[in-house]
Amino acid sequence: MDKAFKLVGEIDFTVAVKDLASTVQALRQRPECEGEVASLGYCMGGILAYLAGVASGVDRAVCFYPGGIHNHLDKAADLTVPAQFHFAGNDGHITDEHVAQTRQAFAERDDVEIHVYDGADHGFNCWARGAYHRHAAALSHGRALRFLEGAPEKA
Image (cartoon, rainbow, N blue to C red; front, side, top):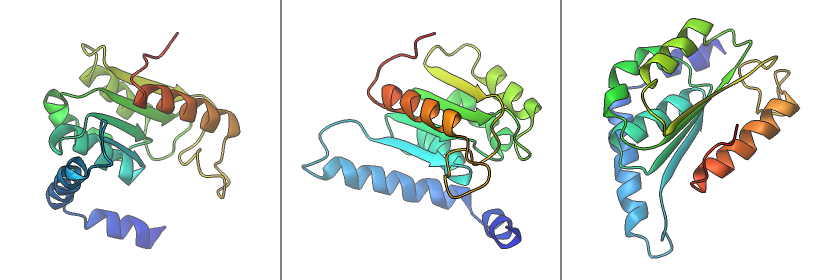
């Protein structure tokens, strides 16, 4: 984990977002890519999915427990595509305050969904980890699939 956090700290997000934009452009040029292009990521990938929604030309972004989200909320106004965020209720990496800041940043947006899974911890979708939370994983996957299809979340 120490090595992973060190490597994440060395990522140049500006370069990563440019790479994502190039990938989106390449996908749109492929004949088998006839629909929308979405970004979906977990943890650091959740941040990258969000940033892809901000600046890489995707049509939708799904962000699972995006670690460090509070460091990128200054770009919230630049997010012009629908987005969906999934947070663990007992996350040791993403605080309740970070979730509240995310809610505040998108409070005026009806096309941004924010879900919090009580009792779940960071990494709740990974069945190979002790943090795996079957209920949160199933519910979040269903929500993400509906969202990617363009269907609104039902209360």
